[in-house]
Amino acid sequence: MLATAFTADTAYAVRGEDRPNNRAPAPDALAQRLADGTVRTFEGKEHIYREGDVAAHVYVVEVGHVCIYKMLPDGRRQVIDFAYPGDLVGLGAMGEHKCSAQATSRTRVRGIPLASLHQIARTDGRLGVKLYEAVSRELQATRELLFTVSQRNAMERVAAFLLAISRRCERNGEDPLEFVLPMTRSDIADFLGLTIETVSRTFTRLRVDRLIDLSQSVLVTIVDHEALARLAESKGH
Image 1 (cartoon, rainbow, N blue to C red):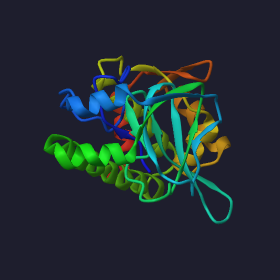
Image 2 (image 1 turned 180 degrees about the vertical axis):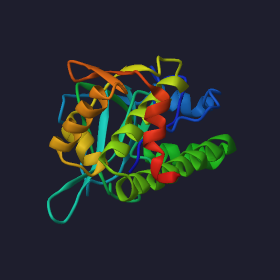
Image 3 (image 1 turned 60 degrees about the vertical axis):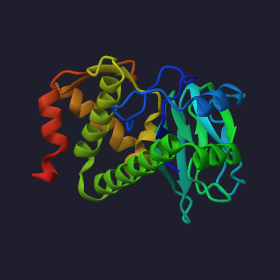
Image 4 (image 1 turned 180 degrees about the horizontal axis):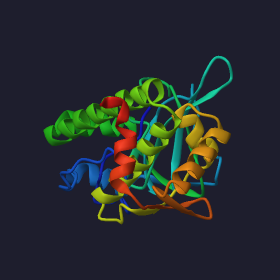
């Protein structure tokens, strides 16, 4: 299940790629349920839930980041999305989780029972609309990921990935040209359908070409945003 950017009054430091431009507060009922939700802390690589687990809660990320992935029949891992503070994970699961959610670093989440969410949605039309919008954004993100891994080459995939994080930062009033990557090269490789070596070489190539700068492999500075955007969209043209 993709991470869903869904801001509530109780969410912290919202950072979500698919976060809507409308920053209106969530309905009071949901905000209250989230405030009363169970807080849990996970260490890096610890799972919030695994594929096949009974889906009883949705979780809002308060601190840290979550990698959402699915294991393929041949043993490979396909990363589907990354959840940032303010994102809901586990939304849309029917009966059992179809993907796994793993903390990339020390992460704090707040859980709300699915039954409570469904109850609020039945009585509050505003929440129903927000949930519909959230599912629509997930579908859009899924289509973008499919296009990325099927049509773009390695340089284009990494460029598009960096621009997506840049847009995420800009939407939340953060610097869109300088940001920290909260995920490993392995996570990025499994998200983009590349090898770790290819991801590393591509970052090096982008740095050598002066499209980006890297500090300690995690701090990214976009040096030439226009060139990076042209690279990411070259297949589209």
